[in-house]
Length: 190
Image 1 (cartoon, rainbow, N blue to C red):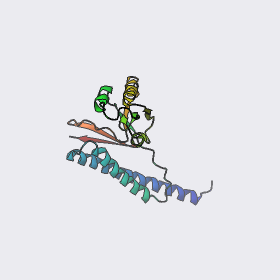
Image 2 (image 1 turned 90 degrees about the vertical axis):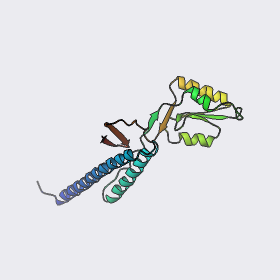
Image 3 (image 1 turned 135 degrees about the vertical axis):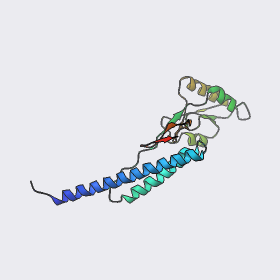
Image 4 (image 1 turned 120 degrees about the vertical axis):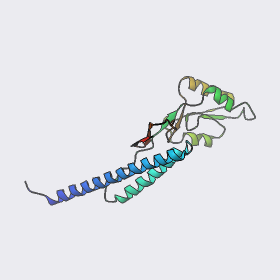
């Protein structure tokens, strides 16, 4: 069997690219861990923690991908979506009491970033844009909107969905998992 130098060079180049990517990912993992510890130490508010980590990871991943110019890079997967229970119908009714706008059309979001009643279609669109399996409906009045929300909640079809994980309760000597796309970081804080 004849030795083909082009295959060897190609395999060596691929191996170098893989090694550089593994090194970069290892550095990224250490950096994310350091940021997680910094965030926990500074006790940022619950919404800023995931955004701060995600922004720093995104910047580092972009830098890594730009550094591997000769390698073929597949596009990153879409965002990871997290769901938490939506407000109860009683909470929704208390939040949207009878008032001046009772007889105008209301847009009801049952599955979205912030489930609720909206009087603007643009506000509704902001709550459901990009959300998988989103659920919204236009109703003629506030009362009809609340009734439809109550029905959907009884069927288990209401959910608050976001691109960042919900804040996890912090307990002493516990493990914290942060999922950022397909990267999983395990940090032990004592």
